[in-house]
Length: 435
Image (cartoon, rainbow, N blue to C red; front, side, top):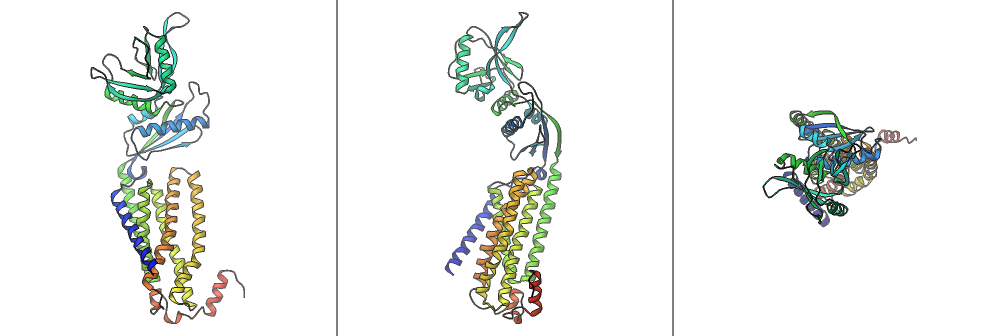
């Protein structure tokens, strides 16, 4: 009994912590609940890329994810669709004019020197030093207060830059960004230390332009050109309506299930309802800690897992009632009921978990959300059914005899009576056993 009391207080502590987490941490909501935008980006061949391969798409997806992160937008989904398209879902963003340009820009930084072409006209020719050699870029101001972009090269880039400035002393070195000339300072002396600066001309940059350049350079260049070929938005009003409907459906479903459990299983049903509330608190707190981005599909997975948690309790209570009918005392019947039901609960939940893993690995973002919430719910439901419900059953009923069979939804004459001949025949038929 001492261990049961310790377990009881451990459950109480876990419940209090879960409630605190729910109250303090915000809920991550997906595009369909808070509104936002959905873009379809298509890769195009260009430069050194003559064909869009899976490797190119992986690099493009990685670069786009980096760029979106630089925008400071949380819970954005970037996933491949087809051979050369990416789907980008951005919650809480409905004005995509700047975001589209940011996502689709190529962000090519090049350092060039003076040269001549076949006609003898002066041109800018590549030096081999590009944005690939950057470590990071920083927004700062010069001595006159104008906005400038400070560059820091990586180890290889620092050596290239030093060698380049050493050979270009007294000459101009032009800095191009996405094909546009930004500045062309005259190199006075070799520059060591791997640092440079883009001034934006005599008047410097506008703040927004300089910040955009910094973000793009830090996010990295796209491996291939890409353009937005489709866009649509989900308004916050639709998202709010979805949330309200989901709340109503969830609460109504849980309420009806709780009423059924009490009406059919009486006191054990009430215990199951309490365990269900604790289960919901623990699971929702887990969603916030991970954090899980809740979408409508994710909420569906959550509600489905609640049904599976109730199903586990039903199996346990039916097995317990069978043990009571066969004449076992209350304590033994409860333990035997849990033991007999465990195999069925475990097998059922494991098949669900395996299916969820497959859905998560192969499905789209919406399917992944459903699979993730469902698998977490199934895992927590096993803890709820096996640990919480069993602990409460032992604490409330103790080790004595069942004095009031009605507490289990049974009649007094049912206790110890076993199955009638008709019931025995019916049970055998259910499992395919012939007389």
